[in-house]
Each structure stands twice: as structure tokens, then as C-alpha cells.
Image (cartoon, rainbow, N blue to C red; front, side):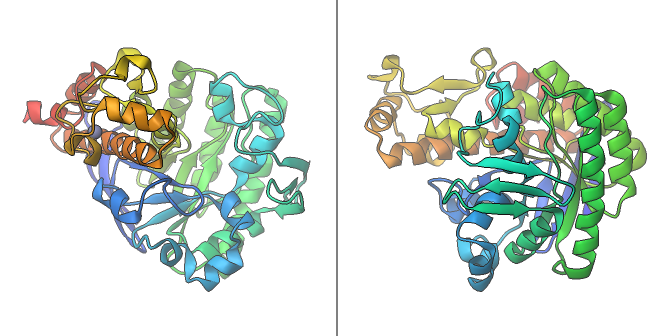
Length: 406
Ligand SMILES: [Zn+2]
């Protein structure tokens, strides 16, 4: 299912192709979120037009509404949302566990504890060997998510890649909790694969998930356990630490171990997508990424720009853009900038909460990320990864980086 075409000599970066039931995906690739069966504010043709070949659907939200039975009745997720290309679905575990102890994203933002996650007002009732009982944020009703349930929902969605159910342990729990949770995640992995072998749709691939928090020995043990399983690909999940250096270290240990025990299986890094993290993830041998960042930032009026000093973003709500007649980014080929929409117009639309403003900034942001990934792919192919990574880190406009080296 995965061909590695070129391996960078100076790092673990690699360029390849995922061969999936609904088509091919050139890697390394970013995967935009179609959380509830839509990339917010966009149509599938917009997403494909930006160069994306795969989107991520969210099992937790889709199982609550419209529900797996209705989605299956409507022909599966691809048919329902009219996205003919590959789809990866997560297991639903991340959202469920975020209700219990706050998600990884909350930690990065400095929020802690139960109910910290902004997109969940439900709650966990119990985490048991069988699975998790929780209260739905939609109707307050009690629901259950176990390894078999998660796989059954993902089978009904007919995604190209399904993720096994794992407990997404946060940073602030003890080593002992992380270790016990990791062992349960390994037992859930076996149950997911057993279910899938019996009842999973033909052609659906399954990724196992490496846990182990920020403990090098636990990460190594989890990596070996997952690699020894029958899974088709490997995702890196759980707490990646409390800052970027720690996150990069965790990814580094994991992919170093994967290079040894599962060099030819594809690797997905869950929930990471800031520009510098994408570059550094690719350097460490990650093949695919998903993250709410570009779309969520867009909905908050933040546009991506080649400015590492400002974390690659500008806040179009700021008064300084009120009369700014420039596009978001000079020479940007995205549908928003190419049509000449000014920062002033976007500033006004965003303040007026006009949906078109959210759509235009989302188009720009996803286009920006798509070009970063395409630069990185081209750089690996041309054996210039290090050079292009340095240019992007220094603030080169994506799209320009590879042109200047050719
Ligand atoms: Zn643009």
C-alpha cells in the first residue's frame, strides 16, 4: 500500500505514494480535517483544487450525527460528502478522552483538566477494559465507544484508512498511568485488528497507534508492539510533551525505532500541523499529518504568511489592516489572493462575520500548507531537503522555495 520512492541521505525524510482504495496520495502530505463530513466552508472541488488528495473524517462526531447507519444508507462517507478521493478516519478516542482530561491541544494552549476542550461539553462516565462510556454532547444520552464499536463505525463510513482505538493520554498524568494506559491501548489494538480481519471492508487499511507519552522506554516498547502487529501503517499519538523541543524528541525516538522495526510502513503524526512542525516532522520521517490548525486559524481570522517570527500568521482582525489594499500574501496563487481580495476587505468581512471572509482565509491557509508540503516533496525528490527546509524556516514563501533552487 505504500511505496517509498526517495529517501533523503541526510535525514529520515522520504517521498513516496500511498496506494489506497480511492486513489493515491503523494507523501509527505498534510491531510485537512473534514471533521463532520465537510472541510469547513469549502466544497470537495475547492479542497482538491488546492492540491489535497486525502481528508480526515472524525469518527466521534460522525457516530453521534448523522450516525453510522444513516451514512452507510447514504452510500458511505465518500458518497455522502461527494469526495471521491481517499479518506482517513480517526478512532474517536481523541475526542472522547479530551472530555475526560483535556486534549493535547488544550495543553499546548495551557488549558488543563476536565472540560478543558472547547469542542466538547459531554463527559466521560467510565474508562473500562471493554471501552469508554460517555455522555453525548448532543443530547446528554449515554454512549459507548470500544475497539469493536470504533472499527464498526469506521467500516460503515468506508474510509480508506481506519485508526485503531487508543487512549489518548495527556501530558499531566503519572508515568504509571501512562504505562497502564499504553498496555490497554495495545490490547485494544489486537481487538481492533481481530474485528477488522473478520468484518472490516475489503480495501480498508488499518493504522495502529504508538502511545507511551514522553517516556523514551515506553515509546520504544509501544513502537515495537505496534510494529509487530498486523497493522498496515503506524500513527504516533498521545502526549507529545509540553513544548516543541519535547514534541520533536518524542517523534524522533519513535521514527528512529520505526526505521529499525518497520521501515517500509507509512507513518502518520496525529494532530500536528504548524509550519515549522511540518518541516521538522518530515525531516524525522513522517509521511502524513492532520491538524485543525490551518482551517481553525482561518475561522479565527488568522492568515498564514511566510513570517516565522510571528509563527507564520497575521491576525486580520487587527485595526492596522483596515485600509491595507494588499492581498494576504504577495504573489500568492491561492484563490483568495489570486483574485485580489485585499486585507482591508477581509478585515471588514471577518469583523462583520460574513461567511465569505472565513471561506477566503481558509482557502488561503490550506493553499499555503499545501505548497509547503509540495515544496518539501519536491525537495526530497531533488535531494535538496536540507536546503529547502532551511529556506522555509527562514521565511521563504512556499512555492518560491523550490523555484529558487531549481
Ligand atoms: Zn493567498
